[in-house]
Amino acid sequence: MSAGRVLVVDDEPQIRRIMRTTLTSAGYEVDDAKTGEEGLEKLRSYRPDIVLLDINMPGMGGLAACKEMRADAHVAIIMLTVRNAEKDKVEALDAGADDFITKPFSTPELLARIRAALRRVPVSAQSTPPRIGVGQLIIDFDTRTVSLGPAATRLTPKELDLLRYLTQHANQTVTHRELLQAVWGPDYGDEVGYLRVFIKSLRKKIEPNPEKPEYITTEPWIGYRFNGVPEPV
Image (tube, rainbow, N blue to C red; front, side, top):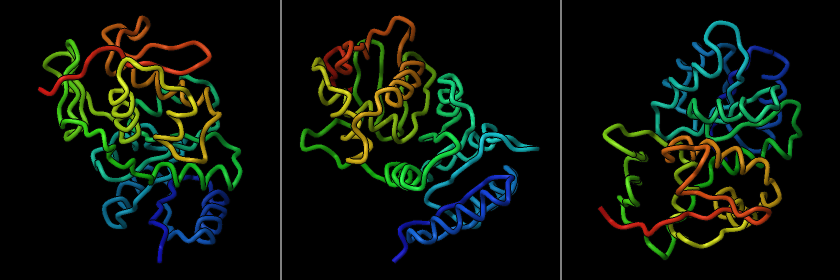
């Protein structure tokens, strides 16, 4: 039984060959594309569960391709980048990626990221209403959007899982490890810098002033806290 269908979009033939061999050995079905444009065509015809998308490609770049692919709410997207700056990673998340991985990367790291991206967080016994409000913030879990006014902003699946977990534990400090393992799974726990990138991206979507967050605040050296009492709306 297949572990899932993967589409690799990268302009380097060697990378595509290595990825195909590695992922096939791990039980995945694999197809590939060498440009963003070809990747979009394969997305429609191949219907992958997850796309591994290089950020630097000739023609349509990875960020532009990611924005187009994000119209499909069901596919997971991991961006492959040689850039290690936090702003580049946030840029990838802003484009709609669920995750990012920096080249060069190891096979165990790649497989862990794929498992995490494909993982669906089970609905907590502490059920969440489909639509909640906290102050001016409206979170719609069904449409996967947030709004501070008339305009709604779409969240990636992982951003939604992250926000859901924090709101389910509103006004409590949630440790880095607990948050990572609840949302990304048991392979995670110590990646505090990684989590910070996702929190920064999420704050850009839910905070009136992301530089002075009101809803998601940092508990130094410990974790994060969602402030407010979520109410069904």
